[in-house]
Length: 82
Image (cartoon, rainbow, N blue to C red; front, side, top):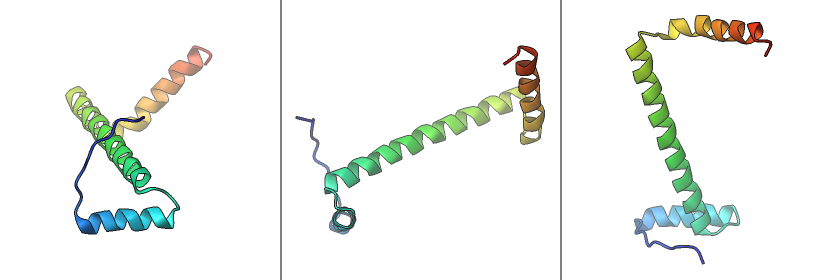
């Protein structure tokens, strides 16, 4: 049996979850699990973007450098026969 946790939602929000679940022929818990999973994935993506922006700034890179860097990587791979 899966672990369970109680979560309180406003009546309006829960009604929307239930309506969506009915429309999709799913259980409300499935809709909620998908929503939480999507939220967590979005948070991971935001952390990755923030980290990348920070690293680029530290290295003095700008968006204008991207085409040159891509070409450098591609040239390196061609030279290695990849």
